[in-house]
Length: 180
Image (cartoon, rainbow, N blue to C red; front, side, top):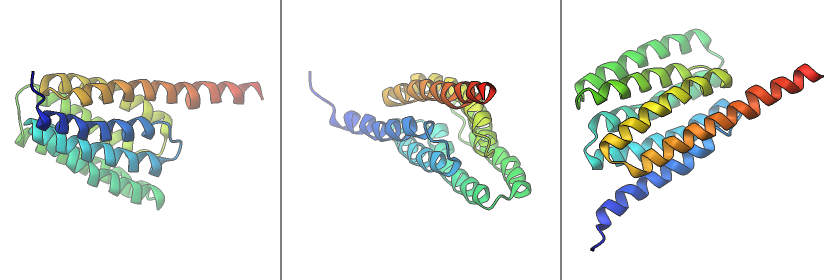
């Protein structure tokens, strides 16, 4: 059995995404989480492109710019602009998802990107973690469909990481405040 180094290379790109994604949800600072998500989305955008998953590629690569916008607006505390950016970017993701249509599987990714746009557009980390838990399930399904082993691992780990973040910051910290 001969090793296909091109396939190994494609999956390795996803490993970079895995590392960034696992780290993102352990951040309790919005800008740090988004910086790591940009690295993850860039890695998987390239991987999906190489695997022929054009909806995933386009939406992930545009996701980098979404996260840059949200990082800037979040730091400047521009809630009104952030609200409009969420709406505009949600529409952009829907349109680009339809233009890069791969079949009904694209619906999952369009939904996931619109929901993650709402999630990353909030500086409320609790709300972000809850919404992202839903998007992880959508991406796991897409990754299975497109053949991204690293993507399945990444989004499964992201889901576990989000759940850990929910427990650490949203459940245990809440219990600590109640006890005080």
